[in-house]
Image (tube, rainbow, N blue to C red):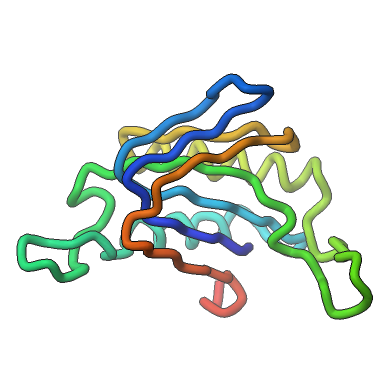
Length: 150
């Protein structure tokens, strides 16, 4: 599993011009799911994300988590995080999970975040989406379950 996490002041996602998800301060999460990912991978990733201390405290140090600041989460599926660009000019996506399995795990993550946080919004799996955000910092992290040992 790969997640591009962007700390945002606000973010939204629209499908066909209609906003379907909107958050204030928090994380925009672009989530890529591989064929090897399981619920336990998702659980570990969600725990890691919720515990990350990347919001500033009163002294300006990145010492606060989502819960500490009342942060919100917008979760967007992003199979292109598994693009393989090593050969040629057209990326391959064989590392991405099969759509049915990836959708189920994506929905599992959305529900898992909803169990952990008061405000969780989501995109539409497989849809062409327009994502709008105001990156805070900018502060962007790339989390890879393989690199994290999940």
